[in-house]
Length: 163
Image (cartoon, rainbow, N blue to C red; front, side, top):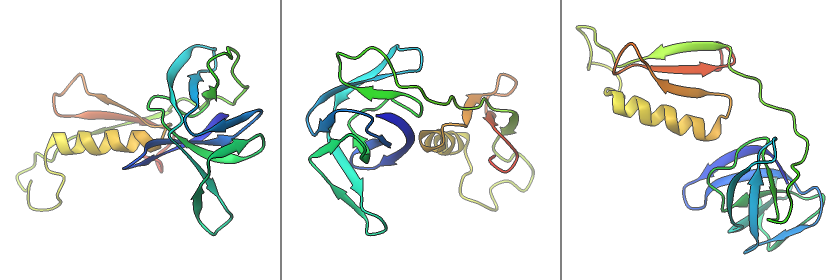
């Protein structure tokens, strides 16, 4: 399975979406994630397999076979462009790499004389938590603590509208 999208469920954790290229996967199988270079990124067990039936919703299935587009639960570090496969395989599927960020913006808590009068994200820790949560679902955003200021954060993305 080449991971094409990730999402997060509060109960299951990270869900990896992709099309099963060959073979089959069932709940309880031991799997690994390989990056584009063939290096092992993550390992775990398939805890849940979700299958979307058109617009009718999502249903849990016990087995996914080649050609199925499914969501797999049970891995915490795998991301988009990684290949989820059995532990015996060492060659990843070919995927298109993610474009690097092109724009950087700095975010920090409001320190003006009117700070604290509007909004509910008032501290740097709340801003940091929100930015980290966004990076769980949006793989094209990168967040770093600013070297110039202790309470500022640099957010890298692919354009103004994304940031």
